[in-house]
Length: 216
Ligand code: DX5
Ligand code: ZN
Image (cartoon, rainbow, N blue to C red):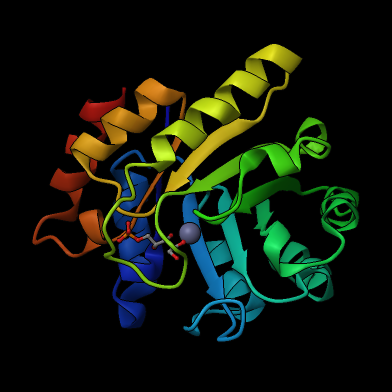
């Protein structure tokens, strides 16, 4: 089981400090939410921020691209030091090509599906991805409520994985706290993204430990 704190809820004026905090606390990835104000109604970071973060942590940088036409930015994010690039099939007419482009850069490739997108429609690319991100909220903001219906989708992703012998990680993102993480783990999730649960608390390290105890 892996924990991927999302810096979306970190203190942007103290990003290095907030990243080191979770690294020292045993986090596995740093989850970076890239939003363009088109695919989702919010704007966050770009590749320059990823490049600035790269030297402050040894952890893999898990870049979740919530942008239209991600194909236009893959090379930039790879050059900035992304270790995993996850894209939404809803954001491009050519998801297969984008996955190939990510892999051509020597970066791990993920696909992220919105709550309204069935995982079955992705059947023909699931064999070539390293990670499947089941969104458990509608992307765009931190601090939203977990959508319980998504547990079924996690199970579907796990069923397909087992049936086909695929090796992808199943990541969940949105509304993750102790109880929701447990439900997702039981359904087959292996990577847990948490933003507000960790960073909005008075003691983020304590929250990280609680979440680790819940899923490990
Ligand atoms: C939502 C982002 C998430 C967000 C999760 O669009 O993809 O990564 O940071 O935030 P919480 O954990 O607060 O739901
Ligand atoms: Zn995310």
